[in-house]
Image 1 (tube, rainbow, N blue to C red):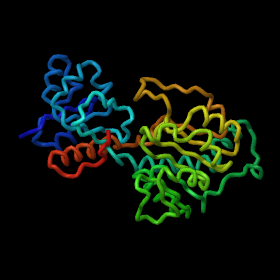
Image 2 (image 1 turned 135 degrees about the vertical axis):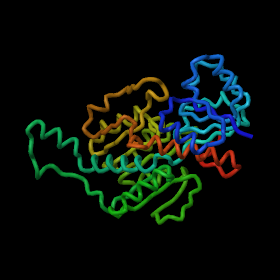
Image 3 (image 1 turned 90 degrees about the vertical axis):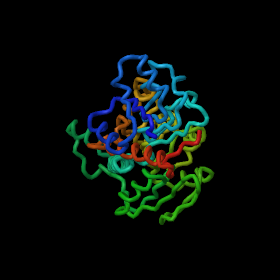
Image 4 (image 1 turned 120 degrees about the horizontal axis):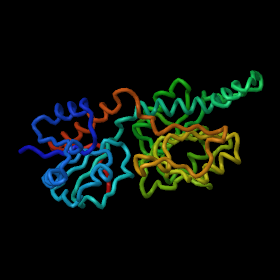
Length: 323
């Protein structure tokens, strides 16, 4: 028996081709293309699988109670903190698009690390002012550094691969505290202080949940080395916005690269910061575009559709979210 699968976001023609190809034989409904609310409600009432980026926003014009027959939700996003679990029954299985964008995000993390270590923006701006002081323009040596990774999953591991030529020492944190990889240290969040103290570079690539919200605050930042580099490609709320700003302001040798912000359009419909980060010379920001490269959305769609296929075939589902 064919499943009724609703794709709730505005899928491109290429993405539609991917879904139709991988989920051939299933009943696919592209909800964004359905303009009549009653028809949309009817489709959703008969839907048992949902493919979404952000169902809260994508289905804001319908009664979410219509999803009474929903069995499985597959997100296109790797993160899931934007999801309103109250819309779904306890029996509904939900999966994130785990690791779908790890490779480009790892490249972005490496770019930020090198840009901050070599102080590229600082010296670029000085050059625009006509200041050319080669001998005093000291930069950081990345080779042999200790790289701490909070969230040693797909992104963390891809970043390690890219940093192998720099002979970095890996201090990693994951859920189990175990790995078969060659690392200097592996632990859990119980070992956070140890990793913070030993890291020259710290990559945050852990999901945002109740356990990790506000994980890095004033105390944790002060445990870090005075000239450490912090990179966040995960979620803004893992770090205290106020505490990070104050630490950067009062510790000029410390630097941070932020790709994931506290208030972003995807979740809140707007971008907003509460402190003047961009006035700081030891800060680098990007508009949460670490995963945005050519074909990344197509690749993400393929992985999400394949995971739906696993669900349909009663195979092991990747990215299962514990509600």
